[in-house]
Length: 97
Image (cartoon, rainbow, N blue to C red; front, side, top):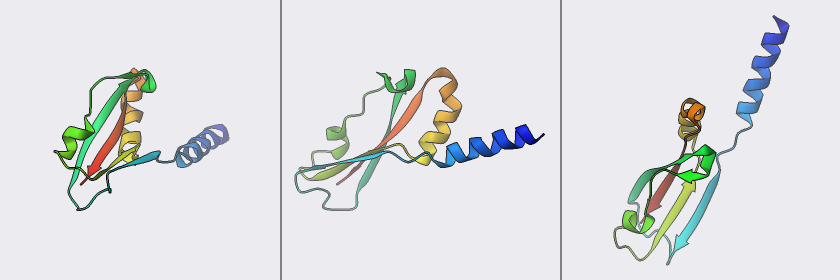
């Protein structure tokens, strides 16, 4: 019983150490407003093979100044925990213009 509790505690500690990876790219002068467009990029084999194409320029809708944020959110980790058995992982891409 103590081994099971120890394993659960170790698992919770490891899960708690997971950070939310974030990268931000500024195009032009960066976001000038509060309009946000979000899409999810899917990868197979834990990020080696993209399954769909997310085009940030199309998401910006012709704007000259915008900010692109690419991140693994908590929701992405939860989805990845479920779909990880088949090696599929999501990543959230947000364009603010």
